[in-house]
Length: 178
Ligand code: HEM
Ligand code: HEM
Image (cartoon, rainbow, N blue to C red; front, side):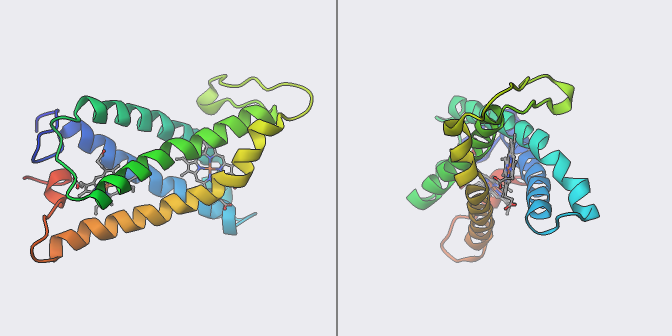
């Protein structure tokens, strides 16, 4: 499989990024669910501590994926309609915004953040920085659940397009042979 995208299928790098992020997002939403409804259970104590470091990995992968998408823009499969184009853009937007809001809040809280032992934020004494903390408090969790709903819709549409007569089956662009 060639690494670059072509007009009929995504190449190996786009596919690797798409499917590895899909798997990691399942884990990320399990940890969010554990935090949402399973406080003080073994489910929470197993999954929740992974939420911040994995969220960081996801934003790094999103930036790489966006860069690769831009490099392949002229040759990757065209969107089948405007809704698909806007939907994919929306997914990218949320994949950037959700962890960004959380990282900003993390910094503004003044608490240290050392994911995988890396001293990313050393923390500080004194008051929280309100303008950094508030947007995350307001939006991070809500937008996280919106992303989950959009992913469910995305999967539904990818499967629906296969079944309906007259529609383009887009699955082979991302999975299997074209
Ligand atoms: C779990 C999180 C998922 C996210 C965030 C996601 C996101 C995206 C994005 C942004 C694209 C546009 C191409 C790109 O830039 O990579 C795309 C394409 C695609 N995805 Fe997903 N996806 C997910 C899961 C899935 C699953 C489970 C399926 C299988 C049913 C699927 C099927 C497809 C197909 C077939 C395309 C190509 C669509 C086209 O070219 O019109 N995705 N996905
Ligand atoms: C793509 C990446 C991410 C997704 C999809 C995501 C998703 C979510 C969701 C759905 C919730 C709500 C859980 C609930 O309702 O209790 C949540 C909460 C939380 N997340 Fe994330 N998250 C991501 C990245 C991050 C990062 C990078 C950090 C920190 C550096 C973080 C820190 C938190 C914290 C502290 C909460 C609990 C407070 C709140 O609900 O805002 N998340 N996340």
